[in-house]
Length: 83
Image (tube, rainbow, N blue to C red; front, side):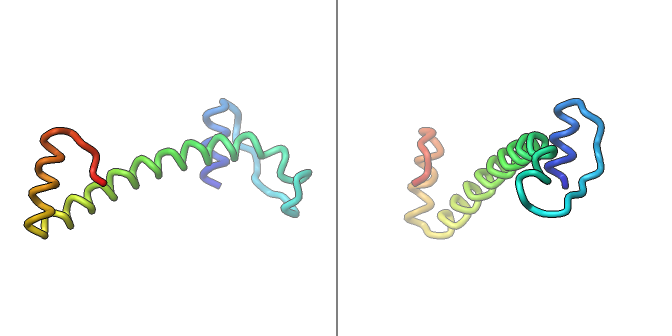
């Protein structure tokens, strides 16, 4: 529902009732463009947020170990990606 509403908003169209009787293509087709656009935007936002959360978790847990903490500090100083 959020994908559909976001897609309709971004396409500049008024929100229609989101009701279909089955999951076959003919009943979903009128909603497809809005759902795909909204899902793409929400998926991209979730991926970006997940990247930063995972990056923070990796650096957090690496700092707990003294050897890994030194490697992490050096990588952050030179701008290398954590592997």
